[in-house]
Length: 300
Length: 151
Image (cartoon, rainbow over all chains, first blue to last red):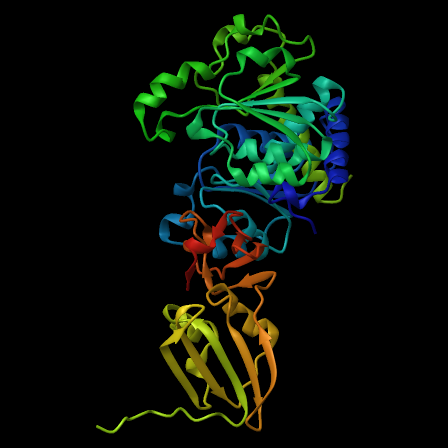
């Protein structure tokens, strides 16, 4: 029984296996392999994209779903612990998909459950299915995962997708370009991690002088509330907004990714540029989640 | 005036833990669960020490610790020395070493960690031993030595 709680739970070979399966599901998304299986989606905090993507994945494979989409419609409001909720649900289903605002809740759930658990986000900690769909999108648009110039722009301090992507991509000898304001620089423990793995990286405050070198631009949102000094936010906010006019010198193969939801960090005029890939990236999430579920349940 | 001196008897068999930083004596007592040991225990604290400034010492009669048990005190007393006593003689001297993993004992520094919300026993892997740094098994955040709170 293999849960997926953290991106580091899986090896490079397992990532590649899941990406291969995802490509098969993309060609043939409607299958019967989950027929007779019941999957719980326990969303202790609201999430549109991730929950719908998981539920679409299950439904397209002919599985059935039980669960809740926000803690107020569960017994949590009566004071039930995560332990008790999981101990009860685990007897009903074949797989549990959990999102919870408390960090480490998914790992704890995986200890309490007698069926596999998929972490669909635990606070600012991990969101491994997002990372796998990011890898899938990178592989699909570039034709490879190895030796790419990956630009990660925006909030590199708090963004959980950034940290997981960095760890997953480190298997494929990338060169990272981290572009952020000082207050939101990538935490030093991740730079140590890259040093240990001999991965090249550069840190910049402005991406325009180097944008022509990017194979992938991974945008994240710079949130005002992350700044201790509001004046600093006002000074820097426009430096981290991507506009269509900035893309002229970029490589033909370059694609723009974003975990979504977007607020204003990618201007709407970018959406029609063929280099904008974020909406297709979200669609890829369904195939990747089909792959993860069928891999975990040993159906593929 | 006659000098008075309180003499702490040597123990016949057992363990002497020396070079505990004085301020961490009670943490060591708690980590080793000494309050639940029936044998004779002697504590001395605020004793002069060239290395530590002021140190504490604990003598526990008829008790020997497993490495796993005793190494836990390295989190608060990394320079502690153990003297194993048999028949009034020091038969072995040992130093403590930070173990590879820590279960219980330390609180996770992350206020949003599940271990600070529900009754979950903390678990850490030790990612650095010189400047002790612990990675939480649940929330994956690091707790550094200067942030460490002993439960």
